[in-house]
Image (cartoon, rainbow, N blue to C red; front, side, top):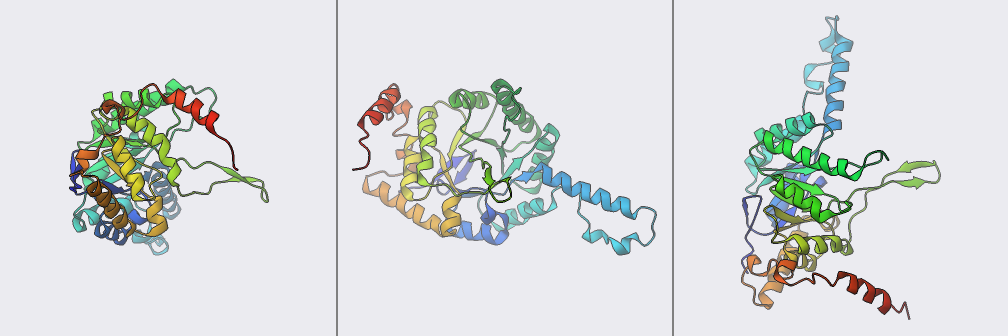
Length: 331
């Protein structure tokens, strides 16, 4: 089966992308992912807060040394934090020279200036696309849903104006009307949408009586919101669709493609099993398609989307009622 596809205008050898994780944060990890079959990689996010903290640290050290001729002896210039995000940019530059697959830079900003300036830096360093990793928790009760949605549109619009490379936006599933929100972003010029982001939420440490955050890896049942909304939107958007969350085996890859995803991203399974797990995913996808007579990924993509009558348009509520009535409990 021909596994080639396209995403964000980039030609890919297959539909599997390694999304941002510690594996994509080093050149060695990136090489292992490419060797195992990743068609593209998303680099770890540039976080505006981290970059600003680094710049502030340099300013404080410069201020401490001001007026002292011996200051360079205490704070050698090479040891000082440098302005901007040098580590991430160097990784982009080195990876672009060393790898033969596309590099997607992930950004997580807080201000328009942060989003746009770091997008430009990533583009200049050699990133072939940008992924906006948006995180705007509406914790202020005075902040309504319309304001949160508009903020996403504003960020996308600002970054699109700042760079010439394709821009995708990664979203959580917590909008009151995800379909309408995604259509707004599509109309605003998004080249791709990544569905869905997993936001880590706080628990409570009962010993210290403090909130704490512990990242958890996704499981295969987490594909369900993505299946629903990708099946609903596939064939109706100009933007490409990337499926994210819950990819553990080739079965999840197949399901995402059947409902209409252009590509499938994986993080948790690769952290559990290592980059080489990509080979199992690709082999399973090809084996499944060959056994059913599909000649290419394009041939099976969207077979179960709503646009192609593969997903019931009006049956969702009836299915919900049937599931509830049909559950008999453990026997």
